[in-house]
Length: 66
Image (cartoon, rainbow, N blue to C red; front, side, top):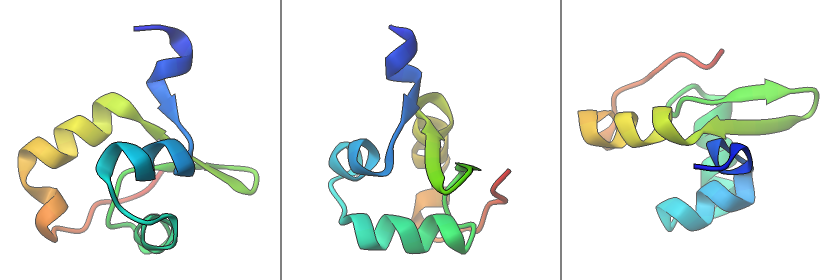
């Protein structure tokens, strides 16, 4: 995996998960998806997102953003 593939932008993650950007922003802001805010931009660790989906947390369990 290339370094650029590890961290996803909102646009990249929305495409990866097949959900809208607005929904993704809402999920990130309320802590229901693992993500990190750097300045004014959200970034998502692809490995954490994959684990989050596999764990079933994507179905509604809240997680803490860093």
